[in-house]
Amino acid sequence: MDHFGLNKKFRHHVMSIACNGKSQLLAVAAIAQVQNMVRLKGFVLTDEILLGGGGMVFDWWDEIDESEEWQRFIFYFLSASYAFVSIVALVQLCRIQLRVPEYGWTTQKVFHLMNFIVNGLRAVLFGFYKIVFLVQSKALEMVLLDLPGLLFFSAYTLLILFWAEIYHQARSLPVNKLRPVYYSINGLVYFAQACLWISVLLRESHLTVEISKLFVSVISFFTALGFMIYGGRLFFMLRRFPIESRGRQKKLFEVGFVTVICCTCFLIRCILVTLSAFDKKADLDVLDHPILNLIYYMLVEILPSALVLFILRKLPPKRVPEQYQEIR
Image (cartoon, rainbow, N blue to C red; front, side, top):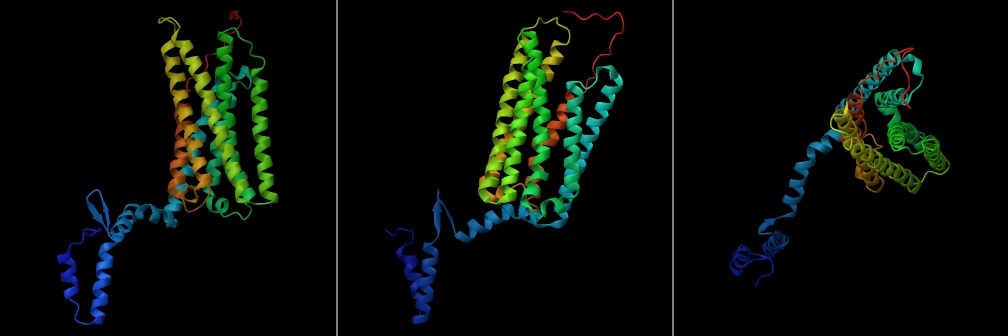
């Protein structure tokens, strides 16, 4: 039995074509080529078909990645999207300030301010994408690309802090240590990231860049975990309120959807950044991966920010002067 499924009649037919030594060599080569065919689940595929078929599937992706026109369109689209979200955050901040100017810088105002800064920075960076991606210093490139991500982390951990304070107050738990913990965690994160930037500046190495990406992945994972813990606790606490409680359903929707959105975006960031640390084809900090950058930044920053700003669009109630008395 022929191992490659070639019967004797076929072999004899090919060999009969040979009339001289040269033709015999060509016939043997033809037999060898057929023998190199791969049998997979009843389908016989040659190497040419395998490579050609795969190339046809991903040709469009490679063409877009290598096209300067597509690069320009995608990065300018990202810049415009970030600018839009930044303007929305600024408008919402102004509305809140006009509504309750006497409250000063509340957590809600700071959250919208940080969203304005983060998205504004991203809009500027993608507007000048060629300068950013082609900068000579790897450390400077990392600072430009990672700093908005750290500010995004600070903005959304501030939301976790806000929920944690509500939960602790509702459960009559101490809240005086929550803000110091928030400041301490953020301070440690910025200090560690600054050390990694300095390390890359002093001695640029692939290992240090990988460690920096894994660090971002780790803090993204723990941020998602924080949303699961305090978003989940607040959600189930609200569910135990009486059905006739005013605004209960609206708050359930708000907390539930924001928790799901934020958990998802930080987990996606964790997974994709980890992949980019070990796979050059998944590298996000390069000019010739525009589609990957579009997918990444849309999923982990633009869409989550837009959705959260929309869900949290409600303005705080106006302060009632004189006759208002705080309930203790």
